[in-house]
Image 1: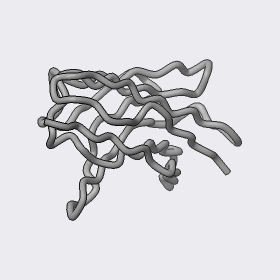
Image 2: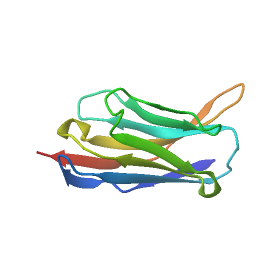
Image 3: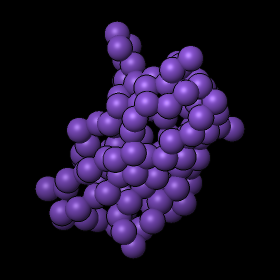
Image 4: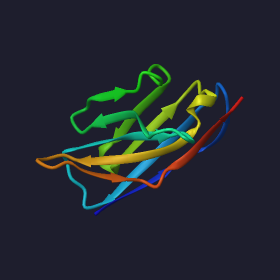
Length: 118
């Protein structure tokens, strides 16, 4: 099993910044993808950013140029630096890690709330 613990959410004014962190622990594996989804009230969960263990990243179009994902493999931690925040970024942000292989197994964190006020 793998446990994911997010931190760094909170309330921020539009135009501000926040940095989310997600630390993974337990039975880790080297071939993986870590990243972030978010879910706004009444909306479906959507991918925000992902970072593979080989170093590739991808972002949702809505956050490109504003959010940056990074990871520290030694600490099994992924970060999401969020700049120029907008009210529409308000959501619960969920960290995930995919164990890659013939069968992909995904683990989720419990989520951290980000609220962007006008």
